Amino acid sequence: MVLQQQTLNRSASFTGIGLHSGNRVSMTFLPAPANSGIRFRRMDLEGKPEIEARVENVSETNRSTTLAKGNTKVQTVEHVLAAFAGYGIDNAIVELDANEPPIADGSAREFCKLIQSAGIVPQNEKREPYTVTEPIELEMGETLMTLFPDEGFKITCTSADKHGRFTQFYSTDVTPKTWEQDLAHARTFCFYEEIEFLIKNGLIKGGSLENAVVIRDDAVLTTEPLRYAEEFVRHKMLDIVGDLSLLGRPLHGHLIAVKPSHSGNCELVRQIVAQINKPMRAARTFAPPPIRAGVGNESPPRVLPAADGAMGIEEVMKMLPHRYPFLMVDRILKIDGNRIVGVKNVTMNEGYFQGHFPGHPIMPGVLQLEAIAQVAGILQLKILETPNLMAYFMAAEHVKWRRPVFPGDVLVIEVELTKVRSKIGKAKGVCKVDGEIVSEAEVTFVVRDA
Image (tube, rainbow, N blue to C red; front, side):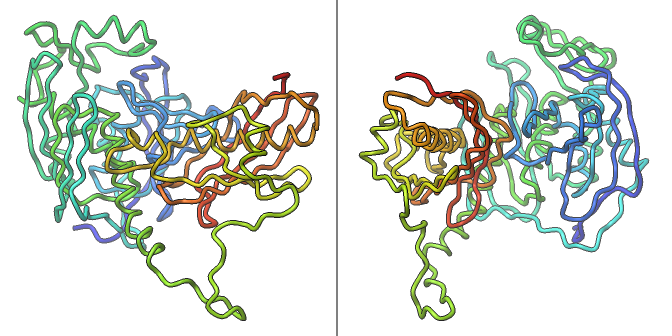
C-alpha cells in the first residue's frame, strides 16, 4: 500500500484528436506539488487558466465527463484521470492547447505509456484515502450503484444496453498492477444506432474505428480483435476509476455497479463527499459553544445582527415577485452603501429536498446562485428608489460551489454591487454557512418596469 503522495518525475507529451470536439490537441503531463491534486491547464487561453479535477467542477456528463470553471472548460477527462488514479498518482498538471484531451485509441493505453515514460516519484506528504464508513446506495435511471466499506478499492460491474445486448460482468481489486493489466486497455464503444444521435448533438466529431468499437446488431466492428473478452464492461470500469477520482483523494470501498454512467458516477462522488462531511456537521451540532476571551461561555451568533437597512420578510416580498418555492431570501440583515447582507434559513421542508437527493438532502447549487441574484436585485431596487420596478436575472460568471448546504444550515448571502449602468447592474456575491464560503458568483441583472 502506497503511504506517501506521488507525482511524476518529469514531463511527457502526446498529440492526437479529441473524440467529441474533433480538434487536434497537444497534451503534456507535468509534475505538481504535494496536496495540489490533478489540474487541467488550458495553454490556448489567455492567462492559462486551470481547472481542478474535483466533482464540484463537473458541468456536464453527457457521454463523457466535462469540467468547467468560469468560462474555461475541458471535456472527456475521464480516461486521463483514470490513468493517474490507476497508478496512484495524486498530483499532476495536464497542459492542453484545446478543450479536450486526445482520445488516442479510445482506451487509457497511451496515457499509461506517458506516465511510464515520465516516471513516478514519492512526495513527503502522506496520502489520506477515505474509507467508506457505511453503505451508499444510488439509483439514477437504469444505473444502480452500491458502495460498501472495504480495506482496498474494488469494483464489481455489470453492463448492458437498453435491450440487454452484450451483457457483461467483471470484478477486480483496483491496484496499479490490475489497473494496467485488466482495465487500462479497454476501449470506448457505442451502438451503431446511437451514432446518428451523437452526431446531431455535436459529439464524436473525432470518432472512428481507430478509437472506438462499434456494435451493430450482433456484429462487433473494430480494427483489431477485442482486447478482453469483457472489453465493454471493463471500459465502463475504466470510466468509473476516472470519475471517482474526482473525490480528490484515494477511495477505499467496494463498488457494485449495474449499468453505470458518467452521471451516476459523479453523483456517487457527491454522496461520498456528503458522507465525509457528515461527521464534521455532527461535531458542530453537538459540540459545546466555543469560549471567547473576555466573554465567558457566551456563544457567537450564527448570523450577523440586523443593522441599517434591515428588512423583514414582509418588506422583502414587497420588493421581490418570487414566492414559494422560489423565494430564496427570508430577511435582509443590513444595507451599507453598495453592500447588502441577506439570510435564507434552509429547512427540511424545502420542496426540492424530495428529489435532491432522497436520503442525502443537499440544497441545489443553482438555488444558492438564485439567492445571490435575488439579494443583488433588492440592493439595486433600493438604490434606484423607483416604484413598480422588477430585477431580472440575466447572467452568471465565475460560479463556484465549494461545499454542500444541508437542512438546518443558515445561508448568509453577502453581495457587493460592482457596476451600475442605467438599469443594468453587476454584482459579486458569496453564500456562507457558519462563516465558511459555500458558493460564490458574479451576477448580471436588469431592472425593468413590473
